[in-house]
Length: 43
Image 1 (cartoon, one colour):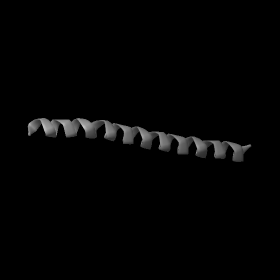
Image 2: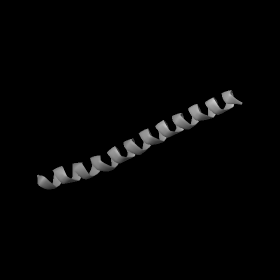
Image 3: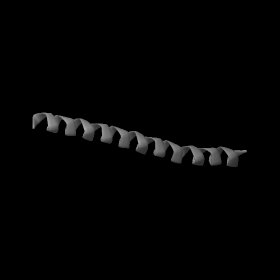
């Protein structure tokens, strides 16, 4: 019974990390696009 709990926890952890990475990448991309637009507008 305990082994099952450990296995499910092991499965959930990488998914959380993956979602964090994806979220961070999206935020970073949005930030870069905004900065690029500001730069173009300034020119």
